[in-house]
Amino acid sequence: MAIYQKEIECMERSELEKLQSERLVWQVKRMYERVELFRKRMDEKGLKPEDIHGIEDLHKLPFSYKQDLRDYYPYGLFAVPMTEIVRVHASSGTTGKQIVVGYTEKDLDMWSQCMARQLYAVGANEDDFVQVAYGYGLFTGGLGAHAGAQKIGATVIPISSGNTQRQIQTMIDFGSTILCCTPSYAMYLGEAIEEMGVKDQLKLKAGIFGAEPWTEDMRQVIEEKLNIKAHDVYGLSEIMGPGVSYECEEQHGMHVCEDMFIPEIIDPDTGEVLPAGASGELVFTTITKEGFPLIRYRTRDICSLNYEKCACGRTHVRMNKPTGRSDDMLIIRGVNVFPSQIEEVLLRVGGEITPNYLIIVGRENNTDTLEVQVEMSEHLFADDVKSIEKIERTIKEQLRSVLGLGAKVTLVNPKSIVRSEGKAKRVIDNRKLV
Ligand code: DLL
Image (cartoon, rainbow, N blue to C red):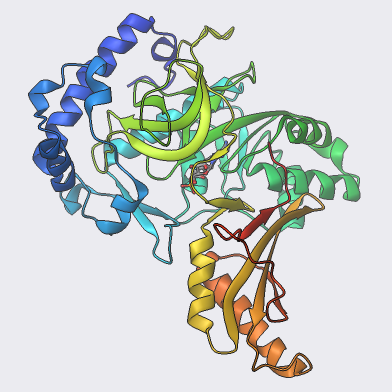
């Protein structure tokens, strides 16, 4: 398959829809045969694969949810034998247990095509040096960007995340031209570069930043500090990883790789499909994936789709920046965090603390901060500093091990956290990202 797929990205809409329809029919048929949960949901709706003739029937199909991945953990939703799965990745689940996704050789190739499209769209080619500062490992960022850069024949610098001084030195010494990392880390790098006074030694020209929400203001700051064009990239482990959609040179919405993923916008409460342009929950159907396909997957991301023709010539629909989520997932320093994961830790620690807590997320020096305030029990004396510090340390350690994140933990006096008359408000997010 050709690497540069501008023909696919610029297909006439009618041709694209024909391709999507053929692929959807293929996917529904094979999933009905291979994935027990999908067959069960189809049967409940009285639907057979023969009832699905093309994308006009998409809305009839049952939804799938993050909870399904948990219920069928780890491999119960895979559509091929494990001998054909060549890689797994994982992401946070709503509770302590992570969710697992799997890829066949062909899936990995398709994924690298997505990221290759992104790289071409920011003007990268085989002359470029791509510094991949997303984390490598079960998180899809590192290996996803890596494969795309390799696909276009660029030189990959697989440095992974963290170690800021080394990142900057490497950027200078190796002549990095493209930077891939989270937007908050890009901001942080920009500041460190300013402090070191080395901006004029950089060869960077573009950045590909995603995995968390970021604003147009942040884009401006990053572009100025790093002297680059900053592009947004979106993705989620369940659907593929980074590259499900990506910004082109116009920097005005992210083109969805529609030959692989069909997007819909629905009302998160009723499940009804909303008209083009409306804001609602983004839903994806994977029409080429072999290993771990999903039909009408509820991403919980809130955004809208823009079907207007883009000045770049690509016809694939653009999604606007997600403006929030229809569940309570937080993204802190690029890590997905569910409040229920924090609650589980607190319940496990138990003892001298009560289940009344508050999660406070903020931003200091362009870095997300996480504080967990927990009420101590009436039996603990406020002047027993040693015991208090010990409990705070235990919670902190457990949070780090479960979330992979450092947090400030503060034990507060009994009954000091404001009680709510309705649903408890457990999270205060002061970041104002949208
Ligand atoms: O964050 C995949 C990724 C890696 C995307 C690197 C882009 C770059 P997960 O860890 O499964 O996958 O988290 C997916 O992150 O449902 C969104 O809520 C959020 N998210 C991802 N990209 C963006 C973005 C990776 N550009 C969840 N803007 C998604 C806003 C984003 N939110």
